[in-house]
Length: 574
Image 1 (tube, rainbow, N blue to C red):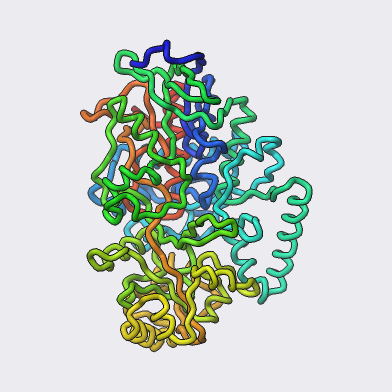
Image 2: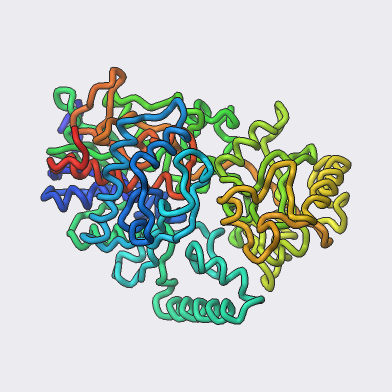
């Protein structure tokens, strides 16, 4: 139990939320709508957490947005799909809570707050061919948001990953990316891009930054606007140092603000939404098989996500799940050097699926369907790696593919590529043999691999791994490329490669909770007054990655569930 005398000042509220990403904001906004007095504290100097630099997608089945497209889920379809994906880690109670409350949460936020979503008709689940899988209607993305609506708070929103911007512009998922890729081949796209660039430049000249927030930045901005409209205080640079326990229940926390410790009394409870542990070296060492020292991992997540929420829960008797087959949502990443000399991390989401692109290990062999989900792709990387070797793969393409689609951080034509070649981020060879030698790939095996791939690719086939055979592959491919939107020969010299290593999009192993997002102790009993959501909560996906938005969808939903429960209006039955 914390000694009150150690705190210089006391602040009282009903609910204390630690973290300002989607789950924390969701819990705070919902609890405030339920009539509670809420305080949000954020460890970092900016709000938004992982959400602000994410893609901004949410996976929630059965919503009114889907029904507006005429997509009506059959009873138990989504549950069947999640049971298939989660396998032995399927948590029926929490999955049912998510599936019941998710559509309700979407309706709440889109009718009561500034949050808005767009849902494409045909964004398939990552394993759409599996039992219960769907070709569309489950993944939605935050609608672009005018940052001017945040007023002075715009300066405090977390920045997107620079590697996912063009000229500082946050490209929205979908049409933004398509138009920028086709700007030199389509008059419509050229006009679209010109208008986008002009609008961005005008905003920079007037406000010092772009004001069209997209993807995760839009979601973070919309949630923040909603919180500010409700007069919910948000304290930045205010990490939680310890929980206050009274008679086995959590009754608040000690935080540090402006260099001083404060005692926060939370009459109803504390919600942990601190972003998981992607930068906690010790926990990575314990839970990431590919990182035996904790350092063999590169995360694009905020560096402040160091497992604070998990440690706080453990200090109150909580238990962190350690039995999932994957402790994080894996993504292949490449490491680049920014203009200021700092290192950047580029997640490889869509380039792997493009025609004229393959991936090989150092032994020169392909090892996976490059168009499959990033999480599945990394698992294949792990299995293909030789014992004792760094787990790394090379994304390879020819000149046509590079200039048409870009690769990693490298944008398509007409943007220059010289800086990437000089820095060593992009490797180049006049021949396949030269590229392999430059990259340290087995030359003979690599040439054999490409020759064999090209023979079938000329007919749009990939008999080895079936690239382009799945709905998700085709969605990320090039619809203008036939007969297979994901397959074309690597034929036009010179040839290029980028080294990829293992990164994450957030951690799965988190605090064990019940269907109300309440933290559980080692005996499965509720810890009174303590909740966990987002990446601080054990993922309901069982260590798998079923579709776009399977972190943010549950984050928003379980934040909503926690807020409702704290306010005494549970979103799901007890």
